[in-house]
Image (cartoon, rainbow, N blue to C red; front, top):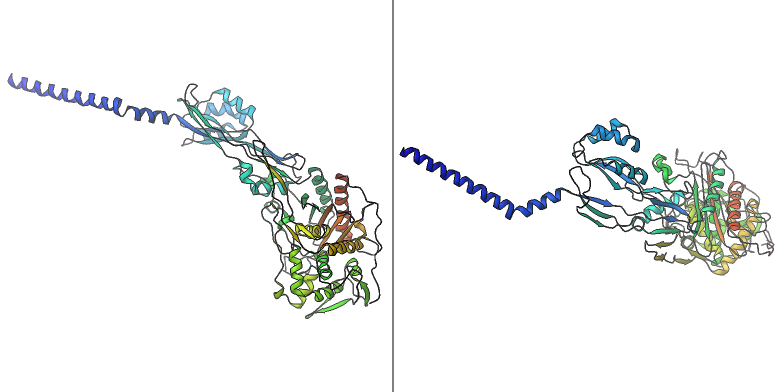
Length: 572
């Protein structure tokens, strides 16, 4: 009896001890750790979603859109919350246009986040929301649209699947266009849907800036159509053109064929996703003679009426350089040398200028230097230091061989001549407008004096002779307007042999109009691997059509002043 009583006492003590431990633990859980557990439970119910910023528009100079963004949604799911994957998939298949098996597989995955569809329309998003499907969530996923399609595509560029600019203006102005994303924190219930009376906190997004370009969308379309015709002639594999305002340096059109539609970049040959106008270099041929002769005039070596006896060929080191066709000696004026595009006469004048001095002028005209255009991937071209020139290299540089440049650099060189000798950095952007409407004008472009105003005026006169009677480019004439410019025909390097044999030619024409009051420069180049046609035959007509369209679009009227008489030959 005594032992039983003792056992009962020990049992009671043990029960009391256990009770004290349990009660103490409850006190700790509810009193001391309760807030922490409640906070942890609340955090487990919170979902953090990004709030996308609306990417800014890219507009032409008149406010017409090249690119803009519309609201769209990404449909995602938390498979751990989806109770019946097959039934949920069946409810979504028609709305998302995704097969039931594919949706079911995604909804059955391990993990807490799967993407079911991207960039669905607001209407579709509303329909999904009305279904109230547990575990299915909508996130911002804006859609970038390019309403102009191919028009201006190489300039505007495109954004990738992550919404980041990968080419063109979209890449250069990524920071301004993209804006700043926001965040939304929402408390959800067991089905993964927001609790109406729960936590719902947001940090708003800041939308991106709008970027206004100097391009004219209508003229861009016209230029691209004309280049497409050139590329369809059976011999031209690539064609490029630039229209630039003489007095501001602004680019009005910039185009190449073949081009691409930014909205279909993922379906496009990657080799076509660049911008050849600023990235592809070629030997420009005789259009370089304008810079060489400008140096001769500026240095006082000659005047437009200086007469030289020009043979049909000239020795350059161990090589012989000829004119397009060898000929007996001819007494040409410097104007005649340019109008007839004489290689020999140009080399004679270049030798009087000297290699070091000629290089100085070429660089002042922008040869071998980036223009500073607001586009990625710009090439500086190729111009070796004059101290490295051999006799044949010096001769070739003077006539546009052994040197390489882009279409944009060609335009910039002639813009300087047309603008009284002052080269203005070409520009594509006029302003950036913030989401609050604040307009920030683009910085003023740098200006470089390449030659004096008097030399530029003499060069304009001589370049007008190229298009006039006896010149190499009568097909560049435009009814009612005085036109100045220069043809170019340069051998094209053959990539198969790293030589010129079988490479064909690059034909060019660069000029400005009206010659007596320059408004626009147009530069054209055509890559023709299987043709030996000259620039005056194939590039000049393209120039004339594009320039005519530019003058018409801007309502430029002829001055009515007659073209001057040109003296091409004389007596030394």
